[in-house]
Amino acid sequence: MPKYYGYKVYGYYLYFTSHCIVEAMHAHAGDREIVGIRDFIKLHYQDMYLRWSEFSDQGFYRG
Image 1 (cartoon, rainbow, N blue to C red):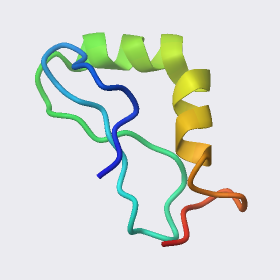
Image 2 (image 1 turned 90 degrees about the vertical axis):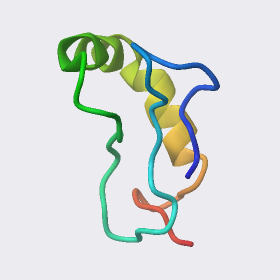
Image 3 (image 1 turned 180 degrees about the vertical axis):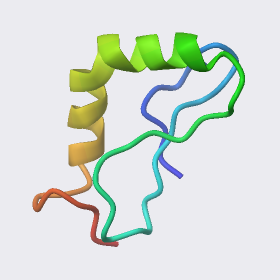
Image 4 (image 1 turned 135 degrees about the vertical axis):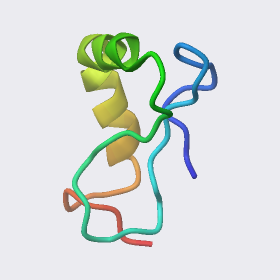
């Protein structure tokens, strides 16, 4: 699964599934430190969107 960043956020990599063709952009992570992860995503949403959109020109990933 592609990672948004090469480093961990509160102990977790943030990644997306590259095989689903019907899901909108979202992030996968563990369930601990969820507040910190949520805050990180809020601060870095634009960068994450740009990384995710590298895999799609139609708003969702086509594998």
